[in-house]
Length: 217
Image (spheres, rainbow, N blue to C red):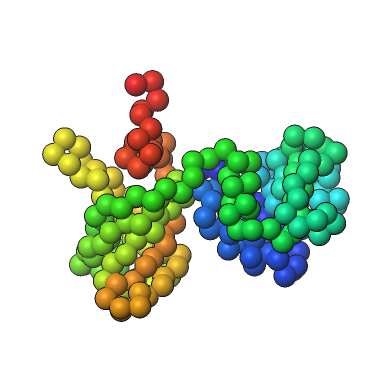
């Protein structure tokens, strides 16, 4: 799975940026500047998102890492390459949510979140009763669904779907990350983040949701 490191330097924009990243198919880790220095020594992220000052301070440590610099030094919405060339892009803040998502996804080169409705069965880890529901959309990082059952944020669940006479279907472990009760109060909209998918689980999800065939088939 793709990894994004976000440096939170306490700027007001970072809460909006973190919210926008929920729609991007990647695992997000938020660090302070010093924490990010240490993280870069042990792992290379697929994308580093940071501000102008952090960009200057991390120029050596983040060399060769794909970067998206959130800048207030250029007009809002403008996108320019930095002097580092292809590995670094600056975008003027503020920027529209859709444009931010498209740019981030393009830098990551990962599949977009896809609207895909199918019946799902949700099994909470600490309950004996499974809940029936319907998916809303999928990404390789997680999914959203609706159900009349009650789940809590951070609750561990197993989501099953896609069973068919000729295939066993998928059964993926996940964790609830957000919930929004519907106005009619008959169901609740949930967002869930998948636990680290195995390669086979990822390929099975790609085949089922995006119609991407197995590699080599």
